[in-house]
Image 1 (tube, rainbow, N blue to C red):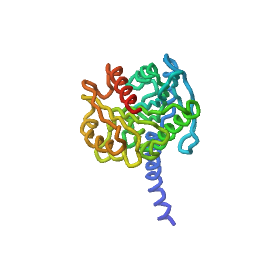
Image 2: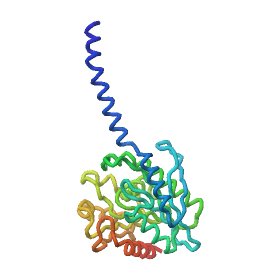
Image 3: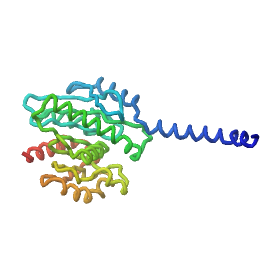
Image 4: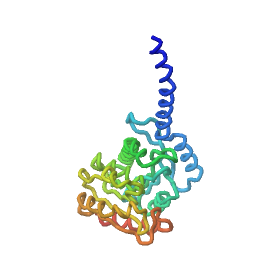
Length: 269
């Protein structure tokens, strides 16, 4: 009996330290709702175009509502869901916010949605755990648009990590109820051996526009031929385009980018 007691005394501190390490890792990699709430508050304080709506899904992986920024047009030809990149919000200045406003002036409804965000220390592998929650949010946005504008084709435009989340959703769902997909800067922070996890074309049959900058991140550039091959398997109208002089965030190229997207969408009809 004394031997057992000694062993317990020896192992209890070790077990406690191990528990704290696992708990700390779990908290680090869990969706950061406080950060998301701060992003929502800031977005609403500076909102100039559109109106806020709160969306909710019925899946068990995540609870609570999330923010969407909606613009509507009485002559809309498309309803565009917009998906931002890592750690950002629906009105981020990194491409998606400017695109949201520009496309709202081009006979489009737009719905820019808040995606799951993690700690600033999180890496791509951590975000992979949030892909199921990201799918739920995309589905909630689609459900909302189908209920409010049922006869208008739905497009998804996504940037950076948002593109990875979008393509993951499309690979899982077959892009059901969506007319086309626009992936901007896809593969930005992927490791080479994880590339297949962000874009599996087997179930996707809608047109895909793969858009990236001439001066984009290295990972986006080296993976472009792989993505092009995958895209060719989706739909005959799918295209890959390079925006000359553009970096990963398309700084000062937002108008050009919107024009490219609008022109491509027009060619789908």
